[in-house]
Image (tube, rainbow, N blue to C red):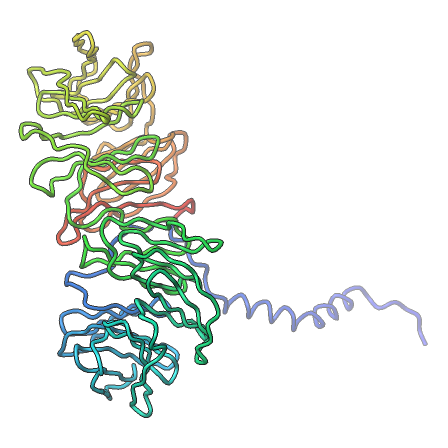
Length: 514
């Protein structure tokens, strides 16, 4: 046998032959893999529904079932299905496992499969305001507080736990939760063996299970159970009327906005709809402590309202009929709100609600900016002036053609007419270019923590002053109304298209949009 070595080219050929199945699998995986999805960088918050008063709600795995005006509306991710009931609905439930829905009218119980129009009914033994599927049965609460069950196959009602007056109920697999006066009870289902009792506030009226944990509604407060103690989770603006939960979200409806459902994603720290739909909110400005100030005209008069961070808003004061502010601004110590009307500059004490006229000139004030504690920059007819308000001294500055201003530390940022870019003026250095990329068409802008926000042709942009590429941009939502303001939590804006008039918030993520 010859010991002559095999030429190297034959070794490479054999290696390729051996690897060919693996290379084919890698190539097949590459061409069949789905293209990566670009990250969604923003979410415009909004109320979910609806222009009509809501009669009943149910939610299962994020799918909403809504009863209003004699019809059921089933909200799916890609479509909305309607079912005419022809009657008022007092209670509603759905089960996506058995694919059934059920609802109660004042006198009748109805149920039917989701994929069929075959409808069944049975007379109710009592008026019902709570329904829940329990496999082959329905649990229902009579308005008197009695707990009953309905066998779907036999179409037979029977009473459960007759000594308990039930306020609300929730079934979670083999655990039945019952809310009664001053206590929450957990039972093994269907054996009805009492497992635990938890004291509750006497005024608790609604129960939901969020991520398998009980959540209560008490007047305008949502409470969660932590280490056997009820802790505040969120305070609404009005008495909470309905409370529901799915795996990923908590839904509630309050008295101030009967046509709106508030959504709280499990990954967020507060609901999306920030203030109710009963008022038109204007001029929102937020200070460094997180307190939001805004103008409300819901009562017919101009009122200043405050909303401390993660608290309910309250009315600070009503303004005189002769004062209709066009701008609001916080003082650096958070003790004063400055506002302007026509040719007069005012400041309003947060502590005493006293309104003081600081300066009145001959020209209408288009805009003002606070520069330290004793100076105010006034913009009138594109001319900038500096007011030392305590001395009553006004000095014109050599900055013609100014369109918009914002104070920053001891300087002021300017937008000049018919010139792109953002300019900076200070007493020490005069006028110089600060940011060259601000388009001349930008209708509004604001600098917040070194990042410039600006609105151009219906697109909101956010960009660092020392970078050329935008950090984020997004089309403005329908009904967006200015003026807007940037605070700690993101961009605050008014949304004034009826019927969803209210204050909303945009919270951009750190991911960039592709």
